[in-house]
Image (cartoon, rainbow, N blue to C red):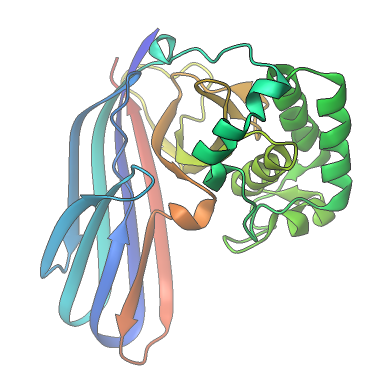
Length: 282
């Protein structure tokens, strides 16, 4: 089944006084893949002095921009039109653990096998992942590890923040999609399976109605490597489908935040408003 979405992501920053300038990076452009076609993409920034576009080390589309001049607010609005056909995603192979842990695979995917501070799994989860991997082949083990994280955590908005580490979310037994993804990525890396963090959007309705505009938010899921990248959403304990729009991927959240930057001059951010609207068009 093919789905087409229009996505509008707006972030507005308010400051307590005028700042002299700001320099930012935005990762808000959907990827172009074999299963996801980017039909349109537009970024509007107010104020903006200049901008340029590049592809980062992980293959993500990045827009760099500067607001060079006094301003008390900054608004970034990304609008995209995307068509998705999940049936066109390359199917992973039925690899053995010996094949997954082959030295050639480790050399090629070493960056997706190395833990970061955000993904380092707590001892309890590491032991659980080892037990699951010992009793199951790689494909089944990856699913079971993901579902174990899903079952262990309760989804609680505001329970964590973007800098929360996986082990902290595990200890609290609560978190949001970012935490679920970090925990699964860390657990898979621990047992020798290349894994990466994926950022994007998820339409919140199981059966989106054509023409309806729905309030959504950014979402995160995981991909693990079994000859091809296999995608899974541990927050919802489900395969990634036409409801998922992929923005990009990396080792963890810090490789692909929606917006990051620096601001010149003493200031305090007094307001940050983020809205995401998804409209299914076909």
